[in-house]
Length: 567
Image (cartoon, rainbow, N blue to C red; front, side, top):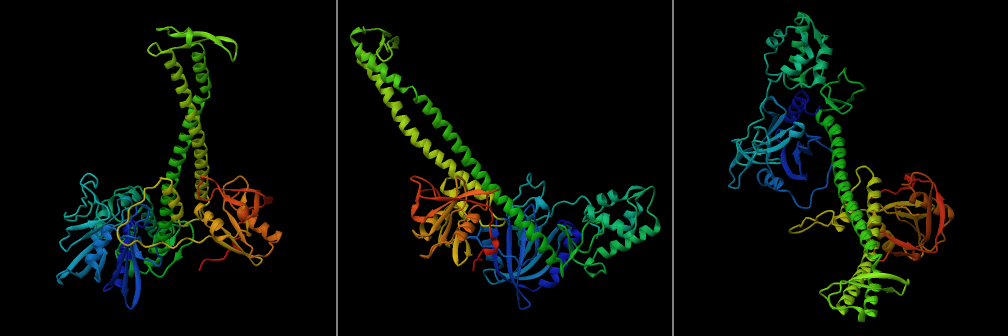
């Protein structure tokens, strides 16, 4: 519903009344397709978000917050250059279309007054944010579109901004009475939807419901139905001032008033901006999380395919080395029968003294008898070295495959909206991501803390990912603390910080249930003192070996009631 002109025009009028004269104090770009303006208006601080994300385009005030990138993108830097300490002159719907125009007064580098425009095109996958000067010449945009890419709607630096072509007039500017008089019968719903712009299908259905007009008519619209339609259209031209105006959401739809054609109860808000913030922010988070996890899963999938390919190649090479001893024996037989070989012989017929059978050994006519023997020994030695190298490589590749499986497990159990910086770091170390080089001063991100529980006076820590498992096991836990992990399965490292006190079985049981939280059913959990846990030689973060352990069967339970929230 965010692309319906009726709701967007109501939002634009509301924002214009509320933000006219607001001063822009700060501009950030937390996403490649999202810009946030921090405003000072009426003695209050407000955050105005503009997004051209294809799945959740939006423009409204928001109470949500996002971390800023370490380095500001070029588009953000350009906006800061021209719009720092600028003032909003007005907000409206441009060209009676789903384009919100923000007029801004600013000063140039020469301290001259200047006017700039921001166009937020809210058109689903065709959405965009375009920045122009007072002559509508494009200074930059989030998405650049050539003539072919934009279907005639060109968005390039230095080009004059022109809105996308409209194939029908908006209902607020159309000659509505003449349009209704032209209807001669048939599907009135389709007639209104195809002939008037700015109305979605569900809005047309609501218009017909509120006016009591049938969607299918045998002839022209009855006079009373026509009058009701004209009256409602007149109200909708400025719905903010009408008696039906009541901003709300119904499901995922944002509406200027409740729609009876939709199922469910409406949730009312004090403004259109609040309604859009409630609906679009959660939608934006969901879409970006799916996109983020899709990227991570694709990277892990590539790593797994690479590891499986390497393992397959290793096993093929080892299969080739299985018969290497025959080349050593052939070399020995050539040496022991060297007196029987004449110049130009291509085959040596002799008895294999290992089996007592007669054998034929191919010879290279270009080599001397000793050269043939050396050739067989060289081939044997090469296969022997290959086997030694490949056996070690296969072991390393199997460890890598196991580690990749643990990263896949992390992604499967990743809580909704949880940060993925640590998993991205793991994948970068493995070569799945290419680290971007950062210039200048780099802000150091605060490390994510592990899960922390308080159980009968003991602190229990659980890792969220492999890097954190490594941290709590080998840097946080002491040698006399208790360490737990699911037996022969991927999962979190769990540590009970004993503090020199004996740990009761009840605490071990709860910690075991936390360790088994990602298991689908009862799982075996091994536990031992931390001193018995060692890093796996040539392993990856979180991969360990341990001894002198005991095993307990635990029921999976994350014990959220015992979780201590981060400060």
